[in-house]
Length: 153
Image 1 (cartoon, helix red, strand yellow):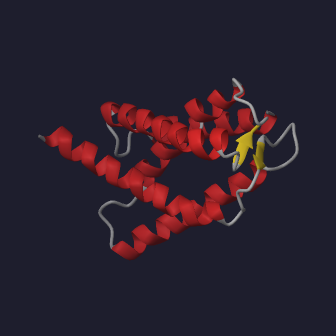
Image 2: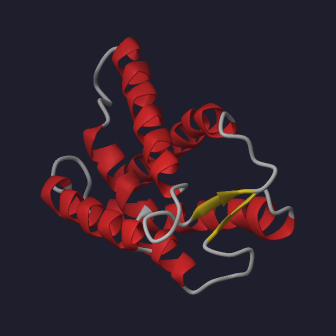
């Protein structure tokens, strides 16, 4: 739990510092709600139904909402603020790879024993995450582009 609280404080501090680069407040709200929705949808199946992984315990914990409400959306907001939308494709790919590595390192830290860690594997293998995270980041980018397109209409 200590690791989660420390991560939430650090990530939200960074979010406050970088949030005015590219995203408007309506975009931030949209990304925030999309991030929570996608995370919950994914967790309903992989965590709660199939027990591929879990947070804290195998049951639904109130502490889980700290992660889903205050960590994941903030990380996604930082990512989108720093993502090089106007750069060549190789820079975009490199950015996604760097973020994938960063997310995987954080996942490894979250796997530490309590009080620092809070994440546990069931049938989920460590290498699933580095393969899946670029797809999730790509979905986030596409969603953000849809939001910006709709705002212009």
